[in-house]
Image (cartoon, rainbow over all chains, first blue to last red; front, side, top):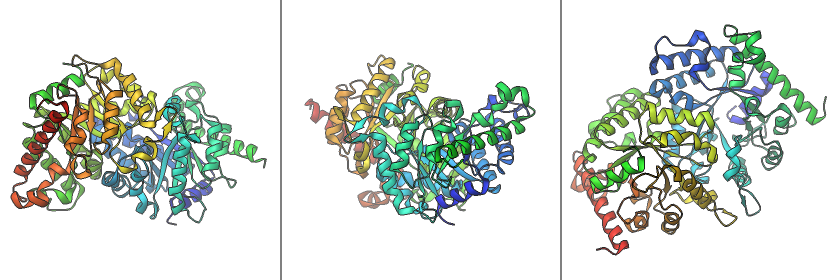
Length: 301
Length: 301
């Protein structure tokens, strides 16, 4: 299987889950066992890599994909970039797909350098990219898309400020529809056996009506849906993202899974020492909530 | 001086130059003395850091600012990120301002992590950022802007595809004007003694008429102007970017300076062994061309 969408679709099927676990290593939030003895970038980054590997061990049987967020690794400098690389290796060794949440966007040979960095050198399976620079900033990824790699283009992000530019009305549609059309146009050249494309889109769970409309504009794009949980998106808000067979979308949760043990019911039930059980419970709960919402929407319950 | 625009303005004055040297380490282009013996990421990255430090030695007396392009460092993985960090340190030690050409863009605490990474940990003076996620993706930088750091927000980029989204007409103006207004609004809170703001904008030299208009919309924003030379922008195309005192803009050239020795007249005149003289000549030539064009435009010759 050499199409990213085919690989993603198969992984969602195999795991029976559309949950994407976001890996955002915020040092202060890590379980006690990973807190470094000394506060140096190197020790912090090594602690992050150990935590990420342990997290991956917990979630690998349960989810198809993880999404490390580059910013939180870069915050530890070069040792952090090493921890990021190690995290990607650990995830792939355990059979997970990896989406580099890099939100890169640049032109020509610079975009090629980003593709080389994150696909060839680091080995991620897909990467989030920013479309503001236009179509020729996405063209350099074409040869990677033919070889099993994927893109998720930012279309409508989950934050309140996404309305500032993404919702500006231009001609017959809001800006983000123009981006969606660009995604659809680029993606038609890399549709796999799953009838889904290696070029996906990022659409926030916090905008459920836009999500319905974007699913129509992007009938064959895998959707990466952030904003679930901590940011306010519900399982029902995400249901429209899925294709009839239950693939075609993955819903991300980061701190809502990884740091659930720090507050509320999970803090009481699991506590710091039980963080693995907390992660497992949060992933299963989210998986079941998404599946129930999807079935409610498709009327197959 | 604790405002980025004040620091940039003073540096342009001190050096008598508005040239920004882009540091894009493309391994195949480096002078022979830096070609690594073995083709490993670590040796390649170390070679890149040595080249960048040597380049900085050459340009430090002549220019106010350098702009390392993250993509070309990330392409060497974690060792490349280390080389990037070393390059920033080398440039700052030699009194240069450093713009991290990172084009990052993300929300809330993720944007904070990018700011921490590139300002606190790496120590860059300014960073390029992508505005697509909206104003709340720029707010997390506010406390850095109060403390001497700067942003250059992508407004109108130099590539042909910049027209795809940036020129879409929305309401009373093209998209990139809306971005410029956002930049102006954010920047008003961090105007320094130079009457310029710590929030600047990226505007390509390849769009001279848009540059004239954007200078009007952004009367106090420093402009970072890419697209000179190799991409087709001329000194006259850049002239409108400057404020009357000759500050307020920096014009970037990367391979047109660093790899000029590889082709044309510079190859004959300097050759590989003379790369330092080639860099020096290219910087001086560009400085003089920009200054002459600026004076032609302002009618002060």
